Picture (cartoon, rainbow, N blue to C red):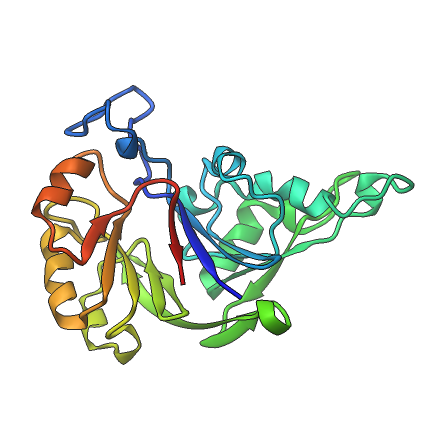
Length: 266
């Protein structure tokens, strides 16, 4: 059974264009420059594993016609990765029957993240994790493990995780099917991680040309590509400084800029 990985959003916390219609260096006529905030999904049969719930998750799910969610993996606690958690409600309600009202038939969705991520999610979005008046809980928090699997039988997907630096916080990198997802990161120790060497796909943070204390930049990614040698490197979390077509002209053959809706068969 094939596994499909889709980048739902590849923009920074501001997106492209910004809320004030600022496009920076990006050509507004190029569709692939329109970037919603970072999230992704892994699909194998009916097993649909969402990575992060960006503020744009509603339009991302509608655009990609995603009808169900099995579970959610969080990379970290920042708002551009988590603020869409409230939008998961219909996926919890979708188990309803005609004879039973939805608030009596809600089944909580398992969400996973490191300790700080789950702790802060429960604090900020307590109404999603526990019953509030007539509103049922829609998610259940789980602390991520170094290795785990989600799904059953032929639909099962095996994961390994790494805890990496993203400025002042730790992010969880997810490794599965010879693919790794590092949407927000500036941890140069990854070049020493055997788990990240010779992958089929390395989806990696590339905020801008120079990067900063919390994000890799283009030069960082080019260096990492030489050391880790993935078959394909996909640049995500792209700022409006980086135009899609201009990036394609200067990148090596195995490196491509992400765009919303990019699909990979694993």
